[in-house]
Image (cartoon, rainbow, N blue to C red; front, side):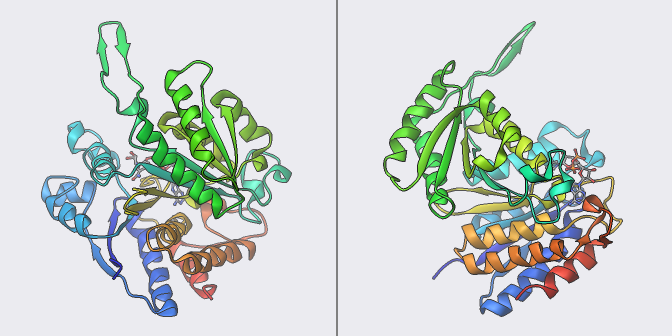
Length: 356
Ligand code: NAD
């Protein structure tokens, strides 16, 4: 029987506020689809530090070890920024969490919802109907490889990629592309970097296993340009860790607001996943009841799709969000003329009404 245990980690700042709305949505989905998740809420981040002395307490690790997926809010804030680095919410909890569960595939859907085309700095005609998925390798490459040092006025970073690291993220991208528009653009800098030469070679070989998927390769500098020149040419973008970090933020800007962007970090071999909004704990608006809960609600949809294979339930949630936006309902971060501004809770109410 499938493991239906999930850990709920609301975290700091707006995390608990937006998580409340996602859990209301999950409740309705459970009833509608006749499924039941065993949910355990745990401490993580600054609140965990305040209560236990560590941002990623042993109790939370124990629970996360047993679940199939983690629904994550956000962590961090000025109160904890000056702690020793191993105790900060980001270094002490978020990175160890990703490492502990081998979350090597980061998926970031970049979707421009009808009615939000004007939220970006690009012209609306380039954005209407846009749907891109950035697949970023998350546990390898230059961010992790050794040696890494600063000695006087010389600094060293090392980039390494192994065949198996590239193969597993490439499979992940091609498998997802099979369920979308069957186009993968792989990003590299194969004209300069050895890691990129290997990357291009291996991605090309893996592509042969997916003959229905059209695979092409772009140098990262050209990709950065193409993404703002004609974003609709892309379906799935496959990137190494650093290139994905940069391009996914560039792509995020196409949608106009961080509050709309979900993300999934997955161990593509076990399907264990961590699902969280792309934004942070937004201390500037925390406690005011005005945060946009849609990124958290959409992260829940990704969890149902990728960790539990509940595609239909995921689509019900995504459709409800689309309808809510199309009906002119907005939180402050995406507000525009002629729309109705809602609180976090009211936005949750409106999504709930459209879940059918
Ligand atoms: P942030 O993403 O929290 O906020 C950036 C801006 O976006 C702010 O103006 C904020 O109000 C707005 N925003 C973000 N999410 C929103 C939402 N759902 N609705 C409406 N507006 C939203 O970035 P920051 O201010 O640079 O970082 C704040 C804290 O969050 C820091 O401690 C940072 O380290 C942490 N952080 C955590 C994560 C995570 O938990 N995965 C990710 C990024 C940043």
